[in-house]
Image (tube, rainbow, N blue to C red; front, side, top):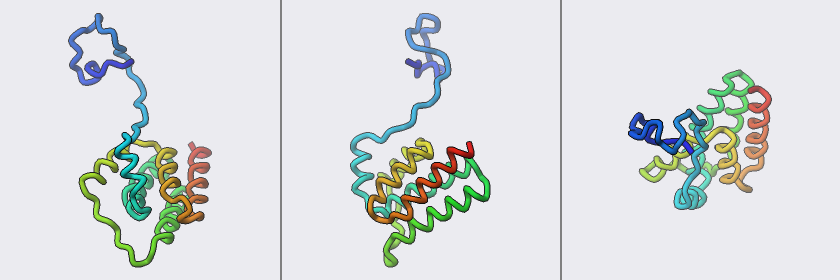
Length: 141
């Protein structure tokens, strides 16, 4: 197990520390039970408002080619098309900011899984486009 004090430069035990002082890859962040429940109770338009900007940034950071840009744009359009015309984009409050921070620590695969879970039966086009984007990113990286 990694030594969290060493990572912050605060380990006082040095060679006698029973934890590892080597670098370790970061584990993917998971939402705690309360945040998972809050996230799953959100309306799809609220989920889109939180998730889409993070997903767009991470997907384009992996592969910023025109093909990826088109696939991301198509996914965003499909998510927005599934929303009712009269809905406003919800404001992001304190709890939503905490959820957004957790989402930022997820990888693209985890973000797409959350998006598909939120979509459910809401729009099948977005589900297909999310799968297509994931396969495209796996093939390109």
